[in-house]
Length: 122
Image (cartoon, rainbow, N blue to C red):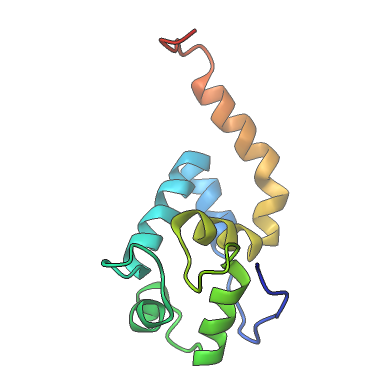
Protein backbone atom coordinates (compact mmCIF):
# COMPACT_ATOMS: atom_id res chain seq x y z
CA UNK A 1 0.00 0.00 0.00
CA UNK A 2 1.25 3.48 -0.80
CA UNK A 3 2.69 5.59 1.95
CA UNK A 4 1.47 9.06 2.77
CA UNK A 5 5.03 10.07 3.60
CA UNK A 6 5.96 13.30 1.86
CA UNK A 7 9.41 13.74 0.39
CA UNK A 8 11.52 16.78 1.12
CA UNK A 9 12.76 17.16 -2.44
CA UNK A 10 11.47 19.88 -4.77
CA UNK A 11 10.02 18.29 -7.87
CA UNK A 12 10.19 20.67 -10.82
CA UNK A 13 6.98 19.86 -12.61
CA UNK A 14 7.68 19.54 -16.35
CA UNK A 15 4.75 17.22 -17.13
CA UNK A 16 2.20 19.95 -17.97
CA UNK A 17 4.60 21.45 -20.50
CA UNK A 18 5.31 18.01 -21.97
CA UNK A 19 1.56 17.27 -22.14
CA UNK A 20 0.91 20.55 -23.91
CA UNK A 21 3.60 19.87 -26.50
CA UNK A 22 3.09 16.11 -26.95
CA UNK A 23 -0.59 15.57 -26.24
CA UNK A 24 -1.91 12.78 -24.04
CA UNK A 25 -0.59 9.83 -26.03
CA UNK A 26 2.82 11.42 -26.49
CA UNK A 27 3.09 12.13 -22.78
CA UNK A 28 2.29 8.52 -21.88
CA UNK A 29 4.91 7.38 -24.41
CA UNK A 30 7.51 9.63 -22.79
CA UNK A 31 6.61 8.36 -19.31
CA UNK A 32 7.09 4.80 -20.58
CA UNK A 33 10.52 5.78 -21.91
CA UNK A 34 11.36 7.28 -18.52
CA UNK A 35 10.33 4.05 -16.84
CA UNK A 36 12.59 2.08 -19.21
CA UNK A 37 15.53 4.34 -18.33
CA UNK A 38 15.05 3.86 -14.58
CA UNK A 39 14.08 0.20 -14.37
CA UNK A 40 16.16 -2.78 -13.36
CA UNK A 41 16.33 -4.86 -16.56
CA UNK A 42 16.24 -8.20 -14.75
CA UNK A 43 13.31 -7.34 -12.49
CA UNK A 44 11.49 -5.22 -15.09
CA UNK A 45 10.67 -2.76 -12.32
CA UNK A 46 12.21 0.32 -10.72
CA UNK A 47 14.12 -0.72 -7.63
CA UNK A 48 15.90 1.53 -5.15
CA UNK A 49 19.22 0.50 -6.70
CA UNK A 50 18.13 1.17 -10.29
CA UNK A 51 16.55 4.49 -9.30
CA UNK A 52 19.70 5.59 -7.50
CA UNK A 53 21.95 4.48 -10.34
CA UNK A 54 19.89 6.16 -13.08
CA UNK A 55 18.36 9.19 -11.32
CA UNK A 56 20.79 11.63 -12.94
CA UNK A 57 19.39 10.70 -16.37
CA UNK A 58 16.19 12.49 -15.37
CA UNK A 59 17.84 15.37 -13.54
CA UNK A 60 17.30 13.82 -10.10
CA UNK A 61 20.97 13.54 -9.13
CA UNK A 62 20.57 15.84 -6.11
CA UNK A 63 18.02 13.59 -4.37
CA UNK A 64 19.13 11.89 -1.18
CA UNK A 65 18.73 8.16 -0.60
CA UNK A 66 15.79 8.97 1.67
CA UNK A 67 14.15 11.06 -1.08
CA UNK A 68 14.51 8.16 -3.51
CA UNK A 69 13.11 5.69 -0.97
CA UNK A 70 10.21 8.06 -0.34
CA UNK A 71 9.43 8.18 -4.07
CA UNK A 72 9.37 4.39 -4.16
CA UNK A 73 7.11 4.18 -1.10
CA UNK A 74 4.72 6.81 -2.46
CA UNK A 75 4.23 4.96 -5.71
CA UNK A 76 4.35 1.35 -4.51
CA UNK A 77 0.65 0.50 -4.48
CA UNK A 78 1.02 -3.27 -4.33
CA UNK A 79 3.62 -3.17 -1.53
CA UNK A 80 6.29 -5.23 -3.30
CA UNK A 81 9.03 -2.62 -2.73
CA UNK A 82 9.45 -1.71 -6.43
CA UNK A 83 7.56 0.32 -9.03
CA UNK A 84 6.05 -1.37 -12.05
CA UNK A 85 5.29 0.71 -15.13
CA UNK A 86 1.72 1.55 -14.11
CA UNK A 87 2.78 2.57 -10.58
CA UNK A 88 5.50 4.79 -12.06
CA UNK A 89 3.07 6.55 -14.42
CA UNK A 90 0.51 7.07 -11.66
CA UNK A 91 3.24 8.47 -9.39
CA UNK A 92 4.36 10.93 -12.06
CA UNK A 93 0.78 12.16 -12.44
CA UNK A 94 0.36 12.42 -8.67
CA UNK A 95 3.54 14.49 -8.40
CA UNK A 96 2.13 16.85 -11.02
CA UNK A 97 -0.94 18.65 -9.65
CA UNK A 98 -0.90 21.05 -12.61
CA UNK A 99 -1.17 18.10 -14.98
CA UNK A 100 -4.23 16.83 -13.17
CA UNK A 101 -5.84 20.20 -13.89
CA UNK A 102 -5.21 19.54 -17.60
CA UNK A 103 -6.45 15.92 -17.55
CA UNK A 104 -9.87 16.76 -19.00
CA UNK A 105 -8.30 18.63 -21.91
CA UNK A 106 -5.97 15.69 -22.62
CA UNK A 107 -8.89 13.28 -22.53
CA UNK A 108 -10.80 15.38 -25.06
CA UNK A 109 -7.75 15.57 -27.32
CA UNK A 110 -7.31 11.81 -27.25
CA UNK A 111 -11.00 11.26 -28.00
CA UNK A 112 -10.90 13.73 -30.89
CA UNK A 113 -7.82 11.99 -32.27
CA UNK A 114 -9.58 8.62 -32.23
CA UNK A 115 -12.99 9.91 -33.32
CA UNK A 116 -14.12 8.27 -36.51
CA UNK A 117 -11.71 5.36 -36.28
CA UNK A 118 -13.34 2.03 -37.05
CA UNK A 119 -12.50 -0.81 -34.70
CA UNK A 120 -12.76 -4.36 -36.08
CA UNK A 121 -14.74 -5.63 -33.09
CA UNK A 122 -17.60 -3.13 -33.51
